[in-house]
Length: 465
Image 1 (cartoon, rainbow, N blue to C red):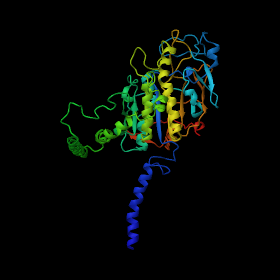
Image 2 (tube, helix red, strand yellow; image 1 turned 30 degrees about the vertical axis):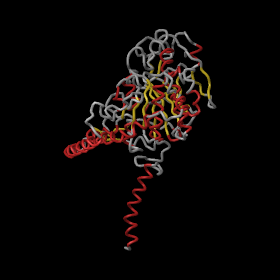
Image 3 (cartoon, one colour; image 1 turned 180 degrees about the vertical axis):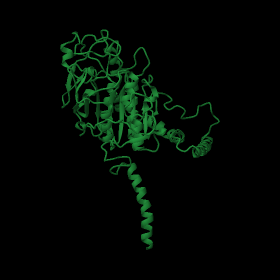
């Protein structure tokens, strides 16, 4: 072997590995590690309407509810409700209009999202296996109505890994007023390695990430002493890990300390929206009391997506009792949904418009959902009870076909009758667009090969562009 061949075979080989790694980080290779086929999307932002947003007052237009308003609700057979007897048919409190080239019907509750319908793909035939908030919320997130299973963000983190070095792979932005039912269990890694759980960031708080920086009273902590302390702690953790191989919680803690050190530099920058233009701040409603909380979450999410965060979950609604701070409109739907939509509609539409203007919508999935729908009949005189038999989700970007609709509910918006869909089908479709075959993304746990989609799931190919 000549000297030149020796250097090429060994030096060139290592250089090729380094180049492949760099290209992978930049997303310039075909199917990346963890992918089963070339992806159309790189990242996901999920908007979760906690409390159950009503499909028949938002996107599922039913003229029969207007025609039969005030009449007896009689769809045939026993009507199963969560906490009431069926009231009379109740029409939507807002007028409906068609929008965009697709002619999609949207109620007057959501005027800003109505402007985006040609970029959105709708599913009107979703169903849930529970009409109780906690289990149904688990199901939409993890595919199971019981706790202990990894949510979709954790599965995607496990399957695809990070696209950045200085921020978490999976970030959760809760409602500033509190948590949804199940709290932090909604973004759990379950039985997956603990490092894949969501990192919670309170974007509107003066202290967005708890314990990231030492308290001001701890003046004895200096950058030098903190570095030395972390080095000692890392040595102790590594020794402990050697005698407890496979302890994912300890591995996750070590990784969290390393990430925390990076976040001390990266987090203040990504959270600082002061350098955003006045037009961008106005687009998201940052300076409006009704939209500032959800708007800040959406704007921070866009900044994180730009910097390579893989999965972001934004919550609208908190389980804080009365007065209602979520979409669970049992008593007065017009009042409660009106308040919640006023805070969500403009920022959610802004996120779609902003991503599109920056050329990011093509490879970013925006996924809007809720745990179940609401009944077409009244509860009391002004509210609606839970409806797990039909509800609506929509998607934008990331390979979804804009202006498309899949599935349908009956004339009442009571039950799914055309192409019924469960969360398994939604999860399978999102994974597919990320380059993952949902049947092959599995993890061995207690002798069972577990999946996000359990033993179900079909890709909804009619919605893929």
